[in-house]
Length: 257
Image 1: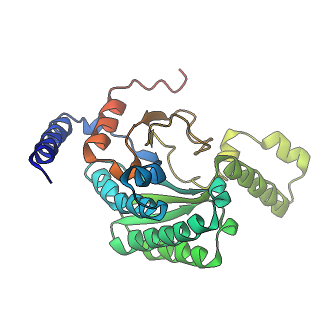
Image 2: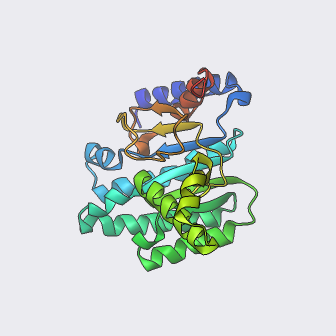
């Protein structure tokens, strides 16, 4: 590392401390959703392979959660694999699935996080389903940040699964279709979502410069604040996180009012 890079790193750290010192912890989001985008583009820019990009992105996760633990964040949802990602070439998808399994194991072994899977289990290989189930069981007692690992997740799929669950529940209770149609409301559908027992995201962060949700938590983000960051996920720094938190704290949330 040359002198210029050292000086730049020092200035960034000093700036991060300044931002952190002015952060209003009373205005910290309770639930943060993260669309971790840019692994492949980061790898291409670095002259590395796509798999190396995914590994670098996975390596950023615990660091990010550490930053969250320094605030009053209670829930973090990490979008690791979408339903659309299954269309990727097998030579990329296979290693990616292995990396994601390692992420789940690492988070569970850490001891600070309560791991929850959100997504459609049936879309995942049986081995991954087992890993996720074990991660949930191992961390069920942990009184720390709830970390939702969104794997095999799609917003439209979640709503479809919620409706299916609602219909099956009605059938099991002997509720007629007429009675169900009369009773359906927003709260009923919400109770059948993957995150039914959790607060909706207050803040959604997307890295890499893309400014779209791509189907991320379509139902839950109706009143969320969004923060789009130009940095690729593997290069996401604490100062970028603090800027997102500061930006969120400065907003006046109206919830449609």
